[in-house]
Amino acid sequence: MKIYNTLSRKKEEFVPLEEGKVSMYVCGPTVYNLIHIGNARPMIVFDTVRRYFEHKGYSVNYVSNFTDVDDKIIKKANEEGVSAREISTKYIKECKKDMEGMNVMPATTHPLATREIDGMIDMISTLIDKGNAYRADDGTVYFRTKSFKEYGKLSGKNIEDLESGHRDIKVTGELKEDPLDFVLWKPKKEGEPFWESPWSEGRPGWHIECSVMAKKYLGDSIDIHAGGEDLIFPHHENEIAQSESANGKIFSKYWMHNAFLKVDNEKMSKSLGNFFTVRDIEGHYDLNVLRFFMLSVHYRSPLNFSDELMESAKRGLDRIINACENLKDLMEGAAEKGLTDDEKIKLDEAGTFRAKFETAMEDDFNTADAVSAVFELVKWANTNARLDRSKEFLNMILMEINDLMDILGVKTDREEKSHEGGLEKSDIEAFIEERKAAKKEKNFQRADEIRDLLKAKGIILEDTREGTKWKRI
Image (cartoon, rainbow, N blue to C red; front, side, top):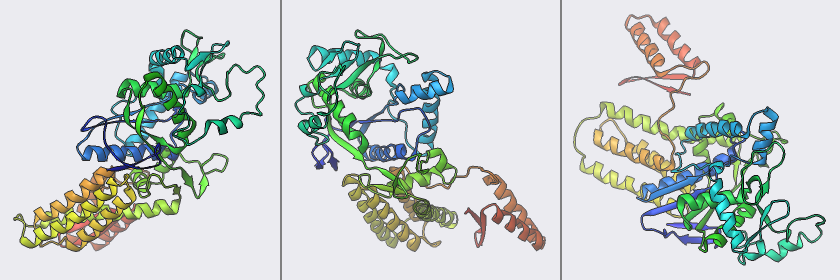
């Protein structure tokens, strides 16, 4: 299995620190509002990476944090006249609801920054003792950037170039030793939450939080650290500097970053009116479609979001779901008998699509090619699945499609949830029974009325030899 490592800027063979196990840290959201579709991409991408590792038999310790103390959270709390904790608690709950909708598995651990303050104070103290950090007169603690000789190794930024960018900055009253030094601990301001520390009443800087949570739940050295490419600098660069200075070990062996998401080829922003939360999308599409859409492009390629592309993803997913429903329908009338020689040969053919799927996933988790392999399997299934096939043959094809889609975390059961003006499955089936009785009594007017009523509700009926089938449109 090869992974593109941002640190080395090349694909590398994945060799875990401990055989059969994967330790993985993924930076989670700052919880001050509903998550947007940009937040959704790393959640879906790295959940899929996790699923594939587990499919290959690895035990995965997957840690993804919630940043629950931050300037944005405090600002939101002040605007609403509530505590920062109330804001973070509310939006962690909403985030988990959206994650469930996108079929993102809960992490092994979802640590909260505010519950790990003692560990942050310990790591900051270690950095001060080692000469990597210092306390300024106002109680701020800074990391001494030049003390870490490899600073810039992840982002490729040269410390001299970074320094030249700060030469014109006025430093009157500046408490830093160097403009490149970054905050580990900041003293409180009026109305802000704070914690006691040896340096001041205050709160941690953003970067130290992830270093400490990764260390506590995964260890000094981990296999994979992941997140959006916007985090490479300065967040992940600073994490490396802190962690490797404090622990004296390589922090993460592999670094994975997903590319940006744009909306209609523009950067997503509220000012452009193209800012969408996951909840906004759920109002128009099943979140299963959003997940499928996100995986239709390689995670390191920029992803453009648009109605047209979402509709295309929906049609593609419908093809897969329809194939699964067709197999289930055929199985109801199929004979209970062993596999024929021809069916055994056909199933060997079907195995080539799984091989293509796994080859794609083994090549830096190329979900775009993996999805293409599923489409090939579906096309093959539609050609080879017939009523005269054995139930075992049909079931094995269905299981194969379901298994590959499950690795991607995409559901193949059509959602049967009620919505405005919609109907529950039981209601639809009751109408079908009523229509059947009406036709039996030669009341064709009522039978047509029921068909038209269901069509108006987005339900299409199809009369077959096996009975009346229905599907949503």
